[in-house]
Length: 291
Length: 152
Image (cartoon, each protein chain N blue to C red):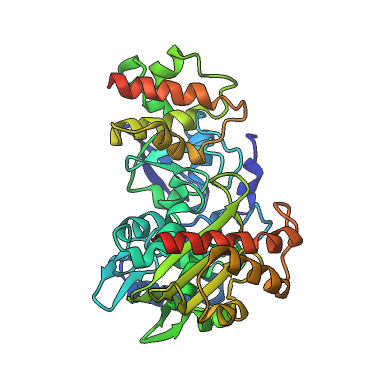
């Protein structure tokens, strides 16, 4: 026996490499609850480590052309659910209004993982609480498309996060749509090491300011602190009309941070995740002002 | 099922379950034990191999999806019995310690040398984000890479 080889013992089943989206949807419908999509696999392949059973059947979606496409349009960017973090970061590197998303996709995990892990996987892995792209996409007001045999439904990312645990088998997240507008953005994350591991907390910021740096519009999303990312509505409301002064808004964030109930884990205690939020808000604001 | 894999230029056959991690097939069926299954989470880099020319943590790649790819393990990187430039530099700089992380380090740095000839120290450190050295011998590894880049 080699180190860790016991984890093979539970592995059974099949992987169907779908050549097209209709073929993938057909297979997922046929498998029902026994099947699941397989994109980058960086979460699914770790199921044995989490003591979770693998599904009997997987439908690999990485070779479906439209799911790996990125389209940068005049009014929106659209990308397939099987686009990797590395590909998205590269595609957005020259679009300042998407700095928050480029940073999220380009700084998660490590280079090899970023070349495998997909944005769709990041959005769909229910038990992965430290996803970088989720708060980034929330602050950009993203929408997603869900496909099933003969149907395609578009919904806001906020609605998707509410519904994703109850979506019926056979449905597949296929596309993410992000509107293009003038804005300053920033993604502040705190990993335990400088890089290469999961962030303790994430603050994603999208803001419009006038010539006097007063906040005209703002969206702030927090990730990794609780089990699901969410917008920080009270902080957004408190910042509207005021000057985007990083120390000042950090003070406001400190007054409001008590509304978060942090999650405990082996990496960090709940209180710590909440306590770093004002600092991350300050860093995000400073970065946004510099952009 | 039967999977035919291209590993270090050889065509090899596996009878593993489709979801079996590539690292287990390499080690237990093909007896290529350079890649090490250590964290099995894609974080430590000890199982890194080249798949289609890119570093991939082989603990996270199911064998079924490796079938149409060119796979190179550390055993295939010393062409004709001669060390490749990064292997030579690591030896010259006495950078090898316990050896657990080194196959993965060599794979990642072989890719860096062939794709980023002008890499800086920061580029080297960024490339090694997913390769953890438990002996903390990073400085000599980075120094060896700088030397290998200068000589290339």
